Image 1 (tube, rainbow, N blue to C red):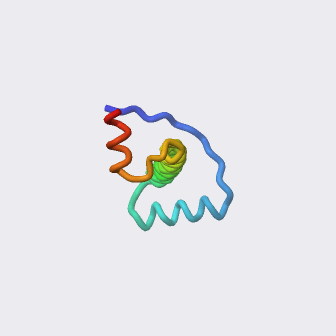
Image 2: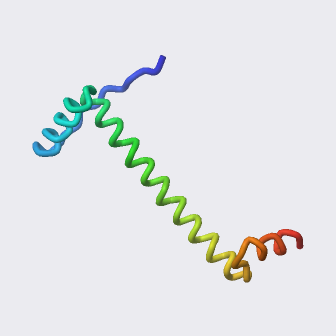
Image 3: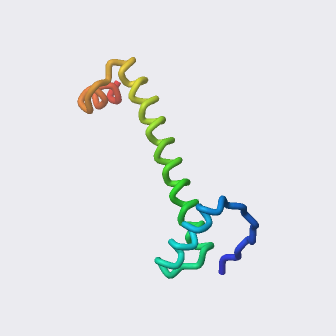
Length: 78
């Protein structure tokens, strides 16, 4: 069974009110709403990291003249 770590956080009044409204509308505890929000932020960050990596390796491939999957197959057979 997972254990929980209790933390005290501060939120601006409007954000706290919005979080409480979301919790009420979704029938979830406030902590679940905050957990969902943190998971979404983590997912977005990972997505951004993936895009950065794709950009980096795309640039490296272009430097080698690899512009298509066919070019990549030829390069990998070397």
